[in-house]
Image (tube, rainbow, N blue to C red; front, side, top):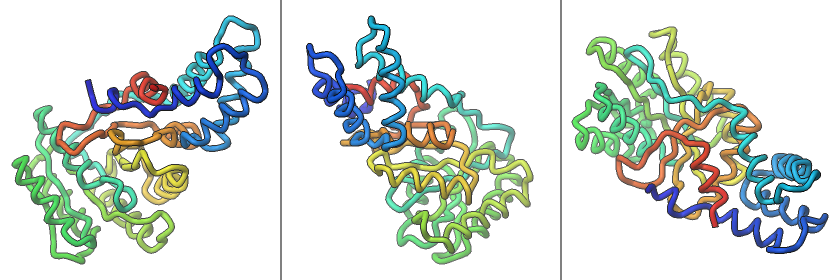
Length: 293
């Protein structure tokens, strides 16, 4: 059993409190449910849509409000296909992006460990050249895994690091090249433009790459996650989400809001500090976690 399944988000208990054990879901109850969903980081738009859909499911009787809410959340989550993560032909380049503190570097190492366990060769690229100690942190992970790390001096051009890493991947016949980029606020336009440059450099070398652009999103981030996703989608061409920090007090509903609003699938969930604490996203398990007491 994972930490994610053990802890839960606590939304189920709050919904039961809002609906009451015996009372019918009247106008006041549904209004309270909507407030609970907003507080769980689904956001006002999605919360209102879920409540409207759930009310429709209960209109004919025979379906409890709680079951209707769960069904509505599940249907919205399944609107975006969550296919098994396919690495692709070698060298497959994975660009890891996100804001400061989201857990990008640790996620890059977890991905490397997962692919290595699958028998794939991996190169890590330390393109986070601005954060003090970021290159050293990735090198430590690389040493622990026995994986090569392509890096340059502090403050070097991140696109140059990505270029070198992809070139090394081609020369060595490496299966996967994981590029760890610098954390940046989505409102920092110059840094976002630099991230777009990293992607262009990779694509010029290998027109079919990067195969994946994974946005690492802190599950505790709240509705700011929607702004993050919108900007990173535009500038970096995000193809999937890694939902990190699912092992604490994460409300986690923002992931469903991002999926619903932007159609971006969740690729993985990360729930701890160990290298093995990364799992392919499972919609059913996520809903169980979200609706747990």
